Amino acid sequence: MGAKEILYMNRDEVAESVKEFPVAILPLGATEQHGHHLPLGTDIILAKGISKKIAEQTGALLLPTMPFGYSWVWRDIPGTISLQQNHVEAVIKDVAYSVSRYGIKLLVLVNGHDANNASMKYATRELMDELDMPIIYLFYPNMEEVMKEYCESPTWNGMIHACEFETSLMLALNSKLVDMSKTVSEYPSTPKLYGKSTISLGNLSESGVYGDATLASKEKGNKMLNIFVTEMVNLLLEAFHNIK
Image 1 (cartoon, helix red, strand yellow):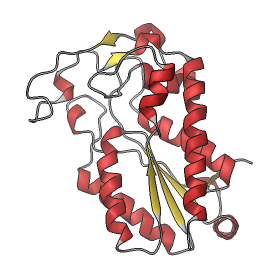
Image 2 (spheres, rainbow, N blue to C red):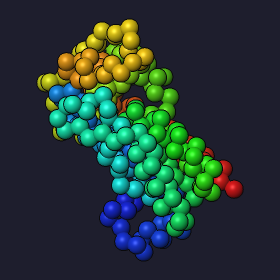
Image 3 (tube, rainbow, N blue to C red):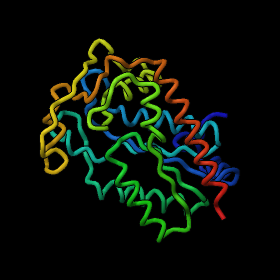
């Protein structure tokens, strides 16, 4: 089945889809630098690409992708759009309230931007006390195990950004947007106060890459993508079946 994207559906088609399978997927991305080889919309493209595959396999409604996230660390780099973290939470909550009004029984958040994870977590906790609609939030399930299996390079302090991992996924989803001739490997030194102060990632890496993007491949990306999509589909169905 094709993905049911509400951007291209009329009100009657949406209403019918909700009756058939009352689940909606909200992809969450960001607009920020990803080195010189990837577009600023990388997190948007990954979140939507994965969400679309999940929607195709389940029949869930695919909502428009949230294009902005909390991107404070890249705020001085041209093209970056950063929302305050509480604003990201507010958007998630507003979307949840909106879809719950016309019969959605489960909202699935699919994230492509690491810094959105905190916003997803806390918005979902608040919504549990406010709405009679469960919400699950997903970000590359079992990522560490999958990366250990398919990626050759280590991460920089456990972080993924414009690295072998993200570049491989982008090659799998939209290789035309990846310029492998500009990939680099960069592992910046880690200041002692990193993670304990306002030291910004934007000031640590010259290329904007954290890891080794030169080792990325479409084959790796497809293998990891299939694993993530399969697991997310299973989690969606489990959450839906647990609705009372």
